[in-house]
Image (cartoon, rainbow, N blue to C red; front, side, top):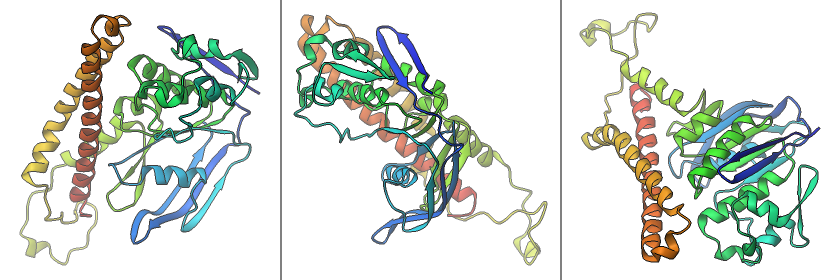
Length: 351
């Protein structure tokens, strides 16, 4: 059984082509571990993902988010533990590096499978130019080599390819990279309504809040923990933990030897965040809000179809500023998340 969902927002049109219904169990991992050399990336991770779950994977840069994603999909074998996929899975993927795109292909080739004039969408055939328009490509771009497309155009092309294939499991590695606001908003709506299962890696907090049902986060020791809810709920759980007030201080010698039970707390680690780390943790949210506002303003400016003809230098300047702001925001989000995880470890007495 196939179901199409068509949404239209400001000229962008996307169709998610859903495949046959998968089994109730989609992915099960038990005690999975993975290392590269002496560096552990995943330690003793277990999860059970069922049909309809939408799982976000978060963590600082280099923590192993893509590695965990590939372990879950079975694209990467685990060193230890067991892993199985459910029945009747039809995955479609979008990778952050756009590795599946041959730069010598034309836009037409990438959408039609290197030949013909039609694209198979939801069991029906659509003319490639019409499908291109759904993703804001001009008809004259059909013969453009992929290597000459901008980052945003490559992102839209990957979405067009992924959504044309029937699927009941969407695997998305940094799907929001290079997307303009219009396309990003529509992608959020589509994923939120998607009847299949979604696995995604993202640094975009708002995107995660709108899309996912749970978040898997790394704790700084290669152990990954699943939290119910979106990214904001994960952050609030950490805040609730940090806001807990310790019991009235007692001389340590008097409490020595007591069993830890109800009403008694484990002694907290003596390790603390440095002054610079505490300052960054307080100021980064404001920095990220400002960067997001700058990005929105720059994207709105570049969206002006007459800007390039009217002021080519201004267009190029805005594009460079946008790229720099997006990069700075990603770095700030990674730093903030790493500090939040470190604070959680310290307050939990594991650091």
